Image (cartoon, one colour):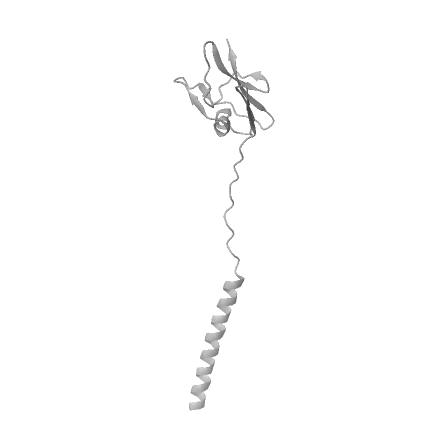
Length: 126
């Protein structure tokens, strides 16, 4: 009888050891969770020279959202750009918004840019 008890105890210990070892192997071989992808936000390239701001368009992004990424702007009570990088128009000047060198017929807040376009803001006179 003592021999049978020892055998049963040995079997139980062996099963416990196999179960623990199997769990350890399972955990060490389990697929590790991959980190969430990191969103890469790229700022468009821009130049600021002689009170003229030029930057690249970006597919699906408004000209206004892009200018906010490359310059400091203020807007007037009508929602128009009032200053860029601290420069405000004087007298009969205004900020002219151009797309590929052509004056836009649409406001910067609604104009959706393309990555192939060049956006320019320059002080112009009327």
